[in-house]
Every structure is written in C-alpha cells, then in structure tokens.
Image (tube, rainbow, N blue to C red; front, side, top):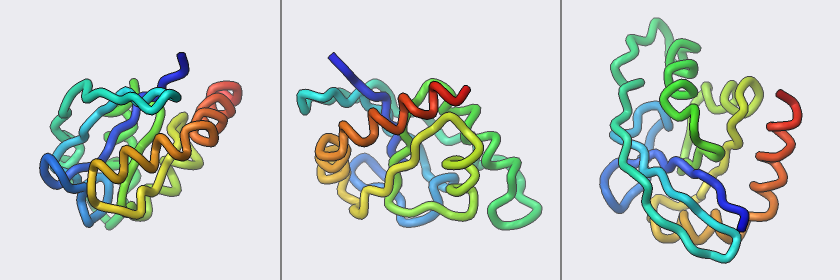
Length: 128
C-alpha cells in the first residue's frame, strides 16, 4: 500500500500554525495512506526556530527545516513564507497548502489529494 510521510507545522495539538512553517512550535508527523488511514508517528520539536535569521526568510532556516524533516515526503502548512519557494524548488520535499488550520480537516485534504501528492513525490525522487 502506498503511504506518504507528512509533516504538519503546528501551533498546538489541534491547530496548524498561522505563521510561517519555520515558526511552527512542532511538527506533527503522520503516515498517510492511499486507503484513507493515517497514524501519528511523532511530534517533532522545531529546532529550526533557534536559527538566528539575518533577514526574514533566511536560507539558513530553510536548510535547517529540510535537515530536520529529511525523512518526510510532504510538508503541509496553512501558510508559508519566502522559504516555501526554496523548499518547493530546491529540496526533495513536496509542499502542500492545507487551506485550513484544523488538523483533522488538513489530514482529510491530504487524503483527498493523495494521488497528486504521490505523483509529485515520485517525480522529485526521480530528479535526484
């Protein structure tokens, strides 16, 4: 069965952060499968918040996020900042905007878009 590892940028246990992805308090990392099942794998503290930015959207923070989430396929967020484009264009990660802060709804939206997300993840893997 096809499954994706998805990291949601979180404010608390139920809400995605209403700020840049790199400012998340933690990342809720889920295994989301094509049959609609999902399970929480871990809550990973966002150590990238400690990166001192010289400018808003500093590339150092981008590198820290990618390193912190190196084992994840999809970065899911309500909102992202300037580094979102770097994540999308300069990493092996697929970015997904949930358009909701509610974690349960966000998980449902990942499931609804599973085939397209899977396609994008596979495309990124072949480019490496």
